[in-house]
Image 1 (cartoon, rainbow, N blue to C red):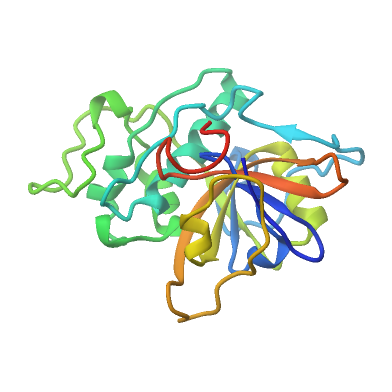
Image 2: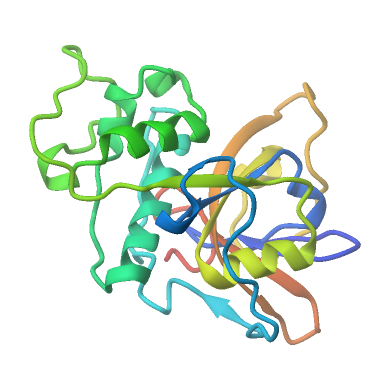
Amino acid sequence: MAMYRSPNIAIAVASIGALGLQLWHMMTRQIISSSCNGLYAPPCIAQPEHRSPRVDWVEAGAVSRAVRHQKSCHSCWAMVVVAAIEALHYIKTKELLVLSVQELIDCDTKSFGCAGGYTENALEYVQKNGLSRESDYGYMGRERILGCKKNKAPAASITGFKTIINPTEESLEAAVAQQPVIIRLQCSQSFREYKGGIIDSPPAAPKSEGMFVHYVLIVGYDTDSNGIKFWRFKNTAGEGWGEAHR
């Protein structure tokens, strides 16, 4: 479990960890169902009037406890998209698939493989092409020399996704109560060195020394014994990062 702190709310991070509301700096992305076709669709998922005070999609079985590792490939953008789709598939079918990250690295031509990419491009790719199983298109930690090799029918797909503009605590909680949500962060060196507890450092300033942009998957929210609210998120840095290593 990792936790960033802000004056308003702490948001939690995993292999699981936590961070503050101010870190929801750029955007969040929520995959939507077939009732909300199209990209950047307006909200159409019912907002429950009485949400649970605690959500953990790892405990619920929708998010695998196994932790992916990017290795030397800047593939967080692809890993979080795959994890979000796996989770939504489980929520709808109770089947936990393991889908291919490598396919997005090799086949999403709008992104840049191991040089980085954008979740919106990856989600558009999956919407158009579906996604293979990991067992059919395994992770290499690098781009394939021969490029995209997809040769089997997709195991899962999506019908669209939406962007949550200027998220508030309430709107994020409503979204995460329904499914895990992708976020993009501006991180500092303290994020790399995180081992446990609540991180008190603010988000890194744009273009500051050591600043890097990173995608993670929000997998729940809770309140600690001191009454501090936080969000749980799953990272893609392997078993050695974070507190819970989930």
